Length: 91
Image 1 (tube, one colour):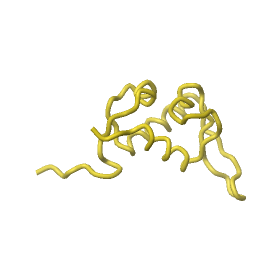
Image 2: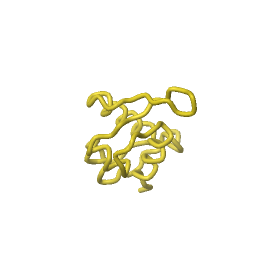
Image 3: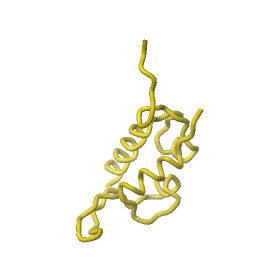
Image 4: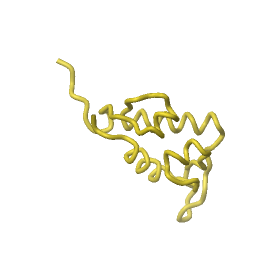
């Protein structure tokens, strides 16, 4: 019997904005993070900024990612996780 997918491994419906970016109708949270980081890498959007005295990895979105994130400001990993949650819904 197959294990039930839960939490970060559960496939969920993508928003139109996330679908436009990834071309996938269903993604798990983990897969969505991988897709966004791959897109950011391919389009040279990764950026490190000092936050509270430490260098923090993040993304400076282009127009396609700004549609997913809801703004064009720099986003840290925590911001990316929140944006993914807002772009995934239960079946």
